[in-house]
Amino acid sequence: MARYSVGDKVKVRAAFPPTPPTHVRTPHYIRGCVGTIERICGEFGNPEELAFGRRYGPKSMLYRVRFRQADVWSGYDGAAEDHIEIEIYEFWLEPAERENAA
Amino acid sequence: MSGPSDTHDHGHHHDHHHDHDHLHPYDPDHHHPHRPDQDDTMTYYKVMETAVRQLLIEKGLITAEQVHRQIEHMDARTPANGARIVARAWVDPDYKKRLIESPKQAIAEIGHDIGPMHLIVLENTPEVHNVVVCTLCSCYPRWILGLPPDWYKSRAYRSRVVREPRTVLREFGTEIAENREVRVHDSTADMRYFVLPMRPEGTEGMSEDELAAMVGRDAMIGVVEAGAGGAGQLAAE
Image (cartoon, rainbow over the protein chains, first blue to last red):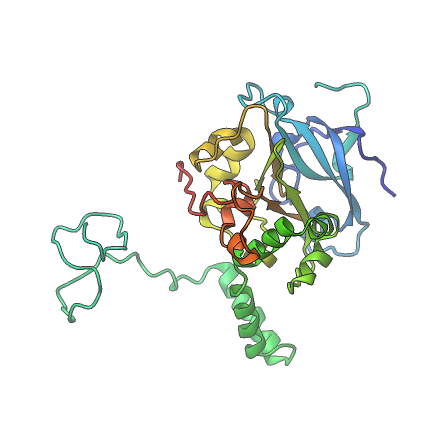
């Protein structure tokens, strides 16, 4: 079951697990940013486990999350309506109902 | 370096002029400054690949011929496959709708199996221009576009197109109007992305084949518009 629905505001966890040996598919630049669920992609194996051959753990729901570029980069010099969309696994997201424009 | 037959870039200037058609007779004193061979270093992963492949063949799980056929099959995938999909979507609005709603089935209709790939088709519109990157590595819709270009895998493209997409697009010769959204798609996990460019103006009478010829690889990555040619180069390369 998906914890979040399309349109929900979410915040990417501002976590920085040691690298290596982890295999994290959440880019550094997006951690801590607040965005909106664009679509639910379905459940997929967790790459942070798969990378080490652990294939039978629980799957994770994957989302595409939409961010305003101006919220991601300070001093973004493009248009105000420019966006970036990224796939993020559920365990990297937190609800962000009232903390928009972080 | 000059002359119409000179299509090589040796990365430096020769101190003597000669034809580069490589038809000159063998001359032991004539040396091209070749880049060193790279097949003499067995890296960890090369050794691993060879060992695993040989074991699989020895144990009868696969054959050398199957490996060879699979490589041929991979090499046969080219951006022309994607161009046919785009052209069909341009001439057939119902097809375009199916392509966006269920890409796997729609692409199968014109004879391509995208295998296990989860594809998202991004339609460019007068309001939105889409561009694709994989900041973490080089994820790319190989099942329809073949191998990614070198610049797509470069650190310069991967780090810059997320942060200053309009500047990078400009370096490809693509100017996006200020009131048109630039939407970057970072291919970080299990989805792959394919840009459906806008049909160029003045192409109303063209056949599907003629239209497909206008769609270059770079238009399906989103760094140029369709019809703008496919030979974009990243200035920072």
